[in-house]
View 1 (spheres, helix red, strand yellow):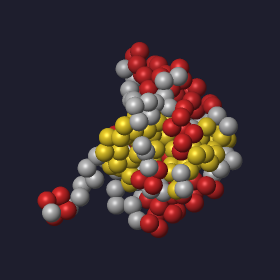
View 2 (cartoon, rainbow, N blue to C red):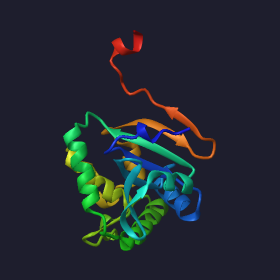
View 3 (cartoon, helix red, strand yellow):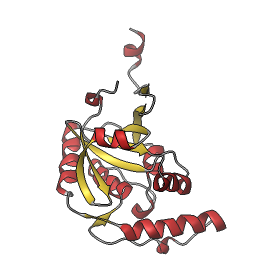
View 4 (spheres, rainbow, N blue to C red):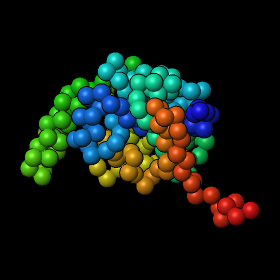
Length: 191
Protein backbone atom coordinates (compact mmCIF):
# COMPACT_ATOMS: atom_id res chain seq x y z
CA UNK A 1 0.00 0.00 0.00
CA UNK A 2 1.27 3.46 -0.88
CA UNK A 3 2.10 5.77 2.04
CA UNK A 4 1.76 9.38 0.85
CA UNK A 5 4.15 10.44 3.63
CA UNK A 6 6.96 9.16 1.38
CA UNK A 7 6.21 12.08 -0.94
CA UNK A 8 7.90 15.33 0.11
CA UNK A 9 6.67 18.86 -0.61
CA UNK A 10 8.40 19.99 -3.80
CA UNK A 11 8.56 16.49 -5.30
CA UNK A 12 7.65 16.17 -8.96
CA UNK A 13 4.87 13.68 -9.63
CA UNK A 14 4.61 12.11 -13.07
CA UNK A 15 1.54 10.14 -14.10
CA UNK A 16 0.74 7.63 -16.80
CA UNK A 17 -2.80 7.00 -17.92
CA UNK A 18 -4.37 4.72 -20.47
CA UNK A 19 -7.03 6.99 -22.00
CA UNK A 20 -6.69 8.35 -25.53
CA UNK A 21 -5.19 11.79 -24.75
CA UNK A 22 -2.69 10.21 -22.32
CA UNK A 23 -1.57 7.70 -24.91
CA UNK A 24 -1.24 10.43 -27.54
CA UNK A 25 1.04 12.49 -25.28
CA UNK A 26 3.09 9.39 -24.45
CA UNK A 27 3.43 8.48 -28.12
CA UNK A 28 4.43 11.93 -29.39
CA UNK A 29 6.88 12.59 -26.53
CA UNK A 30 8.33 9.05 -26.53
CA UNK A 31 7.69 8.66 -22.81
CA UNK A 32 5.66 6.46 -20.47
CA UNK A 33 4.48 9.64 -18.70
CA UNK A 34 1.79 12.05 -19.82
CA UNK A 35 1.13 14.36 -16.85
CA UNK A 36 3.23 16.25 -14.29
CA UNK A 37 2.44 17.98 -10.99
CA UNK A 38 4.12 19.37 -7.86
CA UNK A 39 3.50 17.79 -4.44
CA UNK A 40 2.79 20.37 -1.73
CA UNK A 41 2.36 18.08 1.28
CA UNK A 42 -0.59 16.65 3.22
CA UNK A 43 -1.48 14.36 0.31
CA UNK A 44 -2.04 17.29 -2.06
CA UNK A 45 -0.54 18.43 -5.36
CA UNK A 46 -0.80 21.42 -7.65
CA UNK A 47 -1.36 20.66 -11.33
CA UNK A 48 -2.33 22.30 -14.59
CA UNK A 49 -5.54 20.69 -15.84
CA UNK A 50 -8.13 21.58 -18.46
CA UNK A 51 -9.82 23.64 -15.72
CA UNK A 52 -6.59 25.59 -15.08
CA UNK A 53 -4.07 25.37 -12.28
CA UNK A 54 -5.63 23.80 -9.22
CA UNK A 55 -4.93 21.92 -6.00
CA UNK A 56 -6.08 18.30 -5.90
CA UNK A 57 -5.57 15.24 -3.70
CA UNK A 58 -2.84 12.91 -4.95
CA UNK A 59 -5.25 9.99 -4.45
CA UNK A 60 -7.59 11.46 -7.08
CA UNK A 61 -4.85 11.23 -9.71
CA UNK A 62 -3.83 7.76 -8.54
CA UNK A 63 -7.40 6.56 -9.19
CA UNK A 64 -7.44 8.16 -12.65
CA UNK A 65 -4.04 6.83 -13.82
CA UNK A 66 -2.18 3.53 -14.06
CA UNK A 67 1.25 4.61 -12.76
CA UNK A 68 2.97 7.38 -10.80
CA UNK A 69 6.64 8.28 -10.56
CA UNK A 70 7.98 10.45 -7.72
CA UNK A 71 11.05 12.49 -8.68
CA UNK A 72 12.97 14.59 -6.17
CA UNK A 73 15.20 17.57 -6.84
CA UNK A 74 18.78 16.63 -5.99
CA UNK A 75 20.02 18.49 -2.90
CA UNK A 76 16.78 20.43 -2.42
CA UNK A 77 16.90 22.56 0.72
CA UNK A 78 13.81 22.96 2.90
CA UNK A 79 13.65 26.71 2.19
CA UNK A 80 13.67 26.11 -1.57
CA UNK A 81 11.04 23.39 -1.20
CA UNK A 82 8.82 25.83 0.67
CA UNK A 83 9.38 28.47 -2.07
CA UNK A 84 8.38 25.98 -4.79
CA UNK A 85 5.20 24.99 -2.94
CA UNK A 86 4.26 28.60 -2.21
CA UNK A 87 4.81 29.56 -5.86
CA UNK A 88 2.72 26.59 -7.01
CA UNK A 89 -0.13 27.45 -4.64
CA UNK A 90 -0.08 31.11 -5.72
CA UNK A 91 -0.47 30.00 -9.36
CA UNK A 92 -3.87 28.43 -8.60
CA UNK A 93 -6.47 30.03 -10.82
CA UNK A 94 -4.23 30.59 -13.84
CA UNK A 95 -5.70 29.16 -17.03
CA UNK A 96 -4.73 26.12 -19.07
CA UNK A 97 -2.90 26.74 -22.35
CA UNK A 98 -4.92 24.83 -24.95
CA UNK A 99 -3.12 26.68 -27.73
CA UNK A 100 0.24 25.33 -26.59
CA UNK A 101 -1.12 21.76 -26.49
CA UNK A 102 -2.55 22.08 -30.02
CA UNK A 103 0.61 23.62 -31.47
CA UNK A 104 2.86 21.11 -29.63
CA UNK A 105 0.82 18.33 -31.22
CA UNK A 106 1.48 19.82 -34.66
CA UNK A 107 5.17 20.34 -33.82
CA UNK A 108 5.69 16.74 -32.63
CA UNK A 109 3.72 15.31 -35.59
CA UNK A 110 5.90 17.24 -38.07
CA UNK A 111 9.04 16.26 -36.18
CA UNK A 112 8.02 12.63 -36.34
CA UNK A 113 7.23 12.83 -40.07
CA UNK A 114 10.19 14.93 -41.23
CA UNK A 115 12.76 14.57 -38.46
CA UNK A 116 12.54 18.25 -37.53
CA UNK A 117 10.12 21.11 -37.09
CA UNK A 118 10.54 24.83 -36.40
CA UNK A 119 10.22 25.81 -32.74
CA UNK A 120 8.21 28.91 -33.67
CA UNK A 121 5.28 26.60 -34.41
CA UNK A 122 4.66 26.16 -30.70
CA UNK A 123 2.59 28.99 -29.35
CA UNK A 124 1.95 29.89 -25.76
CA UNK A 125 -0.37 32.36 -24.13
CA UNK A 126 1.03 34.41 -21.22
CA UNK A 127 -0.64 33.55 -17.91
CA UNK A 128 -1.64 30.10 -19.13
CA UNK A 129 0.35 26.88 -18.77
CA UNK A 130 0.35 23.18 -19.53
CA UNK A 131 1.41 20.73 -16.80
CA UNK A 132 5.10 20.29 -17.65
CA UNK A 133 5.60 24.01 -18.35
CA UNK A 134 4.05 24.72 -14.94
CA UNK A 135 6.35 22.24 -13.16
CA UNK A 136 9.42 23.65 -14.96
CA UNK A 137 8.36 27.13 -13.87
CA UNK A 138 8.09 25.96 -10.24
CA UNK A 139 11.46 24.17 -10.06
CA UNK A 140 13.36 27.16 -11.45
CA UNK A 141 13.05 28.51 -7.87
CA UNK A 142 15.52 25.76 -6.89
CA UNK A 143 17.93 27.05 -9.55
CA UNK A 144 17.03 24.42 -12.14
CA UNK A 145 17.28 25.47 -15.75
CA UNK A 146 16.60 23.32 -18.78
CA UNK A 147 18.52 23.53 -22.03
CA UNK A 148 15.25 23.17 -23.93
CA UNK A 149 12.92 26.07 -24.50
CA UNK A 150 10.33 25.97 -21.70
CA UNK A 151 7.53 25.45 -24.18
CA UNK A 152 9.21 22.20 -25.35
CA UNK A 153 9.39 20.66 -21.87
CA UNK A 154 7.26 17.55 -21.51
CA UNK A 155 6.80 14.94 -18.77
CA UNK A 156 9.55 13.01 -20.59
CA UNK A 157 11.96 15.91 -20.00
CA UNK A 158 11.19 15.86 -16.28
CA UNK A 159 11.64 12.08 -16.16
CA UNK A 160 15.00 12.08 -17.95
CA UNK A 161 16.53 15.18 -16.34
CA UNK A 162 19.69 14.73 -14.28
CA UNK A 163 18.44 17.46 -11.92
CA UNK A 164 16.06 14.97 -10.30
CA UNK A 165 16.30 11.49 -8.84
CA UNK A 166 13.53 8.91 -8.85
CA UNK A 167 12.34 8.06 -5.35
CA UNK A 168 9.86 5.38 -6.42
CA UNK A 169 7.38 4.35 -9.07
CA UNK A 170 3.93 3.11 -8.15
CA UNK A 171 1.69 0.85 -10.24
CA UNK A 172 -1.87 1.77 -9.30
CA UNK A 173 -3.41 -1.39 -10.77
CA UNK A 174 -1.09 -3.90 -9.09
CA UNK A 175 -0.53 -1.64 -6.05
CA UNK A 176 3.21 -2.29 -6.22
CA UNK A 177 6.04 0.12 -5.44
CA UNK A 178 9.45 0.02 -7.09
CA UNK A 179 11.90 1.85 -4.83
CA UNK A 180 15.05 3.46 -6.17
CA UNK A 181 18.35 3.72 -4.28
CA UNK A 182 18.70 7.36 -3.27
CA UNK A 183 22.49 7.52 -3.34
CA UNK A 184 22.88 6.94 0.38
CA UNK A 185 26.40 7.32 1.81
CA UNK A 186 28.38 4.05 1.63
CA UNK A 187 28.56 3.84 5.43
CA UNK A 188 24.75 3.76 5.48
CA UNK A 189 24.64 0.99 2.90
CA UNK A 190 27.06 -1.37 4.63
CA UNK A 191 26.30 -0.87 8.36
